[in-house]
Length: 538
Image (cartoon, rainbow, N blue to C red; front, side, top):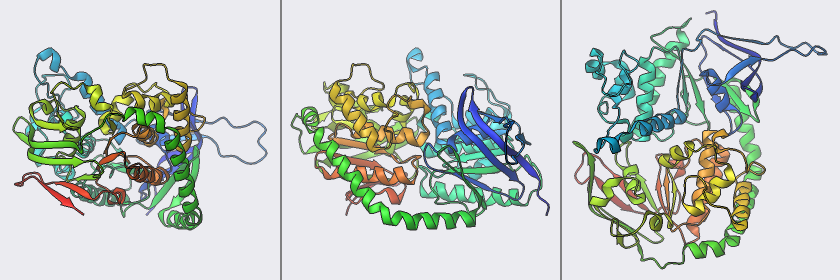
């Protein structure tokens, strides 16, 4: 079967005004092809995806007048035009930002639940995003639509977007994109943060859609073309047959999946000889920074704390008819590193937000931190002084002040603020530079947080949380968006932090490869069961 070219990018740059993100890209998408776009954090993959979505410009380069060798004629064409949708961690974060800006709870003097999944999806089916606007007739039939069933969102359509888990938000985004009639769909890190059931749903989705696109000869509205973008080469759908890799802001591989797998095998063999030495050097540098910061950490943690760091007594949390936590009894003691696990929407993030105070229902429940019941007179700063936090909510908040430079983001960890509003001390400046150097950001201290890729942003926020060696380090899917190198370094960092004896970890992850050896205590959530949780000791 003859192939038809759908996208051609030949000798083109990816630009944003005067800023060049990728100096040159050469790539073609044809029928019969299903592509994976991959590469390390900051390598250029994110810029390429944004360009496909029309968020950055794809501009033909000018030919050099004195070129000595034949060069390709610059060309960019796409049969999709602007008919492209992207489902990503960034898109999910942007949606949550939008919902927070639309929140009128203070004006209404009651809780504003915001848009529901049904309302949001119906915006591409003739509905309106205007508050209070009536739903179109098709809204009553969503549950029966195959796209809704394929994405597994039929049971959360009437839940507010702000009350959905990360995985539920992203499946809702996917459903909306499918129903929008877009002809090209880019899925960025589609498996990040999804539970086992959601991953199975997504793999079934790939099997269904990719098979149709591989056999199709043109652009069919009923079945969008799919491009998958992932930081790490794992859980790649079987239908993917082509790989495009970006490193150091250029194309570093473009070819078949089989050839790429061979390249990865050779890289892995080479890495085996150096990984142990690199790990030892990384941990030695980390220990040096930790010892040098010992005086400040000792001052922050000078208060004596009881053995019981966190305790929940018959805690119940829910919204409307939906009950998230039911009679939860749970206690965390010093040195007990906990893994929290359960399906998307089971309440893991809710538990962490009760601890941090980001969920206001904490003040009506018996939740105690460091021996004191929440709402008994402590200030939010008394609490945050003892906590380090890496979460989706924190990431969203930092994206809203994205002009803050990296050095200030790290230093803000000492002050428990979003952004830096105090003059940094010489010690804080030196410590921030040391941590940034350790994480591979040397020389980029003044770079704006917003200019980083999502994975790079997450790595910086993890450093921010760890910089003061907090009594409790709260980790809600900390490795979202991290490439293989950062993934390994961050897990090494967390193991080292846990081994100091001064910090206790509370860790949420769906990825078995991210479970740390020190996590011997497990809180496992089972929604709709009695009881709705189990405590496991390893």
